[in-house]
Length: 257
Ligand SMILES: [Zn+2]
Image 1: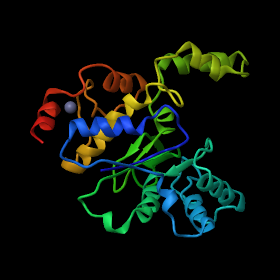
Image 2 (image 1 turned 90 degrees about the vertical axis):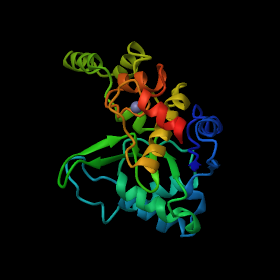
Image 3 (image 1 turned 90 degrees about the horizontal axis):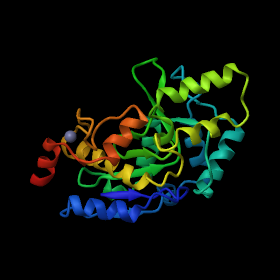
């Protein structure tokens, strides 16, 4: 099982994630690695163009970004060369992104005996069905699996009151610094960028990747279980930060592994 580091976050401890996994599945060898972009053999510009092509043009439609602009390619070049650079306001197609990363994996490790989990700061989405809207995701369970450190902030919805308050302030014409003030008011009830609880939260997502790999189903219907497919921030917090770790069924499966 290979974890690929995402160097832009400081509160995600990959060594702790690896030792957590070693505790759960001692028979599996866990490695932590540099971001897959570090392994590319292509020219940076070619790879940057591939990334730019996976950008979602509009969340309303599945139209592909087949002819990326020069500026978009340069932006991606910057990200490849400096992986700790911040990224915001862009969404990528999760499946296309996974395909690019697949080509960056060591060829001799692309069989079912290897599980690759790539942490990325890129925010990605997937469409529900053909022609449907894109929805931001925390994770995409595929080969390789992708987990987004932006997705954990942006994909699960914040408390309903957060949005109610946001609309109220907007209707009063208040715009400056609104989001920051709201974040302060609702602090603790959602996961923020580089949140200090990030490592603990991500333990559940790597376990979902493991269950996807072993049993084809990463999810559990029990809200208390780390494998719960949370759509709300408060559900993420409940599943990942409050006991128990796993429901009875999944605890038993883990013990039998
Ligand atoms: Zn469960």
